[in-house]
View 1 (cartoon, helix red, strand yellow):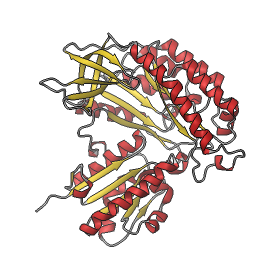
View 2 (cartoon, helix red, strand yellow; view 1 turned 30 degrees about the vertical axis):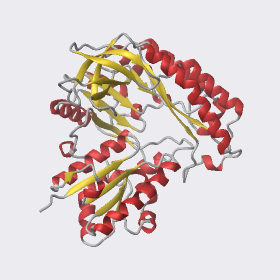
View 3 (cartoon, helix red, strand yellow; view 1 turned 135 degrees about the vertical axis):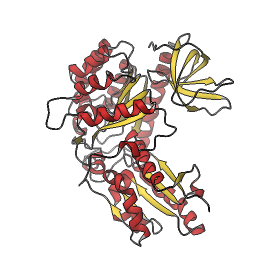
Length: 446
């Protein structure tokens, strides 16, 4: 008898990645095996992202492609999961007749039950935020992963006018510190050397019913034996406190890398976005972070073409990017999302203008990244191996400052999740090329 298999396609943030691992674990408990080919699968899950309109359209296009597998084998199940599932609910079943079920972000732990309901003839829609929080950490399929991800806080209570996350992820709820520490120790015992703490606003974590905040949690996690690298994502600028900043100076294993979304370099646009901070306070935060950890590599998110953005506003964003010299950034054209306030703002920016502004940002950033990466040429870096590159015999990994490094594997490739020493020989705008060494010690100069 042919073994039953499942296929999970994941788009979006690290929260989605971890949710996919949770769903894979449930399917494996039912005896299904993973496959990399959707055509071989008995259960196909699309774990979706709805942050931008383009991603949502891509989801429905992919579902249309997967329908062919049901024509070939009518017992194949197709499930829409994640943020688009939470956003669309029953509308997705109406739009895609061959879709078997819809599973929202807060109902990931119900996958086994939802599949059983479908096998019994129902087309279930499991959405909403009535039951979140605890889940079995030993039922997560982390096979082949190079880092252990731990959710600290789910949902978001912010009111950013462009963002759909509060609708798709629900209100904020923090996990107790004891649960977080237990899961981190579990991952260290499992063999992970890098831990990544997750949340839509990760640094807004607070101990439920207690006084501890994110600074206390960072300090506790960083002191756990075996945590060689510690990262967290995504931070909200307004929620950073001096005590949180100080952790970068206290703990060497807290990686010198931070993703800190600013979205715009214009105070007027930040107010329209409802971000709750100013350009000046963001710059002050960056200065304090770099004082605490001079080698800190900083990345950010930027939106161009937001309703009402003038050329003066855009030039302010360019100036911020030029002044702060981000190690990388993620820049996007504004995308209207259902249920948010921004689409109702006056003075929308036309697509031609938004596209031109986006390309100007990329043109500004590329030489900055090239120069920052060139500073690492001639250094030796500890590289956590994440997998194989596109070229035969080439492996890839990340430095502690989150740079991508490609290097020849040699006769004995490094196991994914292990750390190897690499001499950096050449810099490109988006990656580094190096030669593998035998030594192992931690360094990452900026």
